[in-house]
View 1 (cartoon, rainbow, N blue to C red):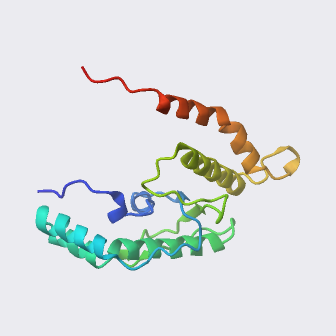
View 2 (cartoon, rainbow, N blue to C red; view 1 turned 135 degrees about the vertical axis):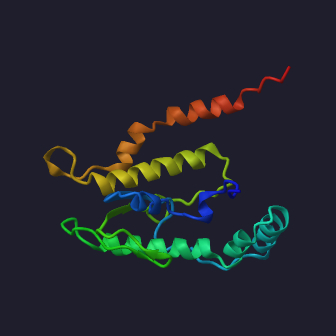
Length: 193
C-alpha cells in the first residue's frame, strides 16, 4: 500500500515545488527563517536513532530511513534556498528562471519566484517548533507580517512613500489580541464529565 502520511519537512521543506509541478507560473514563497541560517548542519545522534527506530524498525520503511540517514531533506532545503536566492537576484522585468532540480528537470517554461524571508535579528526571530510562549509567537507573527508588507508593497502608500511594515503590523495585530489569548489560556479548563 501507500506510505503513511508524514511531515512535509521530509519531502518538501519549502513548499513551492508542488505548485510549480502543477503548472504555477508565478509563485510567492514565504520563508520562516532569515537568510544566513545554516540549514545543512550535521545530523545529531538523537535524530539518527529516532529515524532508525521509527522508520526502519517500527514502520518497516527502509527507503524513508535511508532518506533521513542521508539527510536528503536537508539537501533539498539547501537546494531550494540556492534556487530562491538566484530568483531573487533577477529584476522584476525578467521573465522568470528555468528550474532544474537535482532530482530532475523542472517545468519547461520559466517560473517567476518571489520569496519573502524574515530579517535577521529582533525583527526576524526564529521560533522553535516547541515554542509555547504566546508572546514570542505573537511577536514572530508581527515580524513576518511587517516583512511581507515591506517586500510586497513597498510603495503602496499615498504619494509613493514606503509603507512602515512594523507600524502597520502593530495596527493589524494590536496588543489586545495577545492580551485576549493570554486571558483565555489562564482560564481553568473544564473537567471532562
